[in-house]
Image (tube, rainbow, N blue to C red):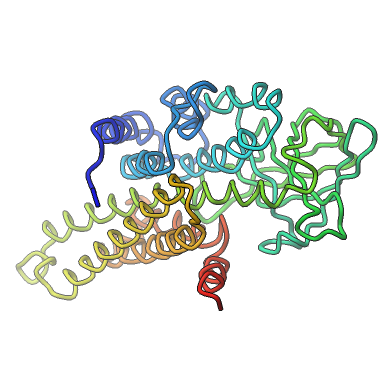
Length: 377
């Protein structure tokens, strides 16, 4: 078992870390989506990490992609921008690349890889959150088109998206085999995008609703065969759950470095607080959670790249990283004392940005269900 990174992987990590510190972090404090920064990240390759080079991406495997995202998460506190980039890449661009007809791939993927078009995934509905088999969205074939009716909620990138990957039921009686996926663009008749919603964290990631009323979508915009929507969605979630959470590994490393420095510099009762066992043990636990989550995520990405059955590994990694990120956010606040709850200090932002990680891409409860099922329970 070799834990060394290749020279190319090591160089890409360092370049990504330096870019995040130099070009992304100076704008992070605003917690608002910045199109100029997005475009710079697109030019760097962030929006096309896992897209083949022939389509304008960097052509990275899942493990290297996660490692690059870890570098970005370590280099900047703007996890909202990184989350938007991950949702764009894994939940929109990758499934179109893997499942759409070649003409649609050629039409959309190069622009998505460069970030000149922004992608969004529209699966969740107000009445069907984790229960993706109970979607109210309907798509009815009408000649060379499908007519879509849908109310989609909690759509990352919705207010800024150029391309939506929308899931709707084409045959209700077929259960999960009756779900299909479609590319929808904001300029199609019957498309309405809701206003951006305020969130507790990930503030620079625009987030809203998508409404489709008698929206006619050409049949050539269907992604995969009719009834293949569940397969399309699961393949996208495998990429997202495996790779996107690299940003939280980087964020936890940044938090850990900060609390170690603070524990060495901050003095109480005439000695550094890191000399108190209650402080040092909490920091040791932060290190333990980070390394455990990191190894699980790396293994999940490696298994995904090896085309092995990685459902269990990915669920274990997603659960471990997201739960660790929340706890590390709490620890960072506690270890900084009063400063930890002062918004201007930015320490509490780590917790706010981590809270959603146990909900998106399948809740922690869903991951536990998948783990239990893999164990035969």
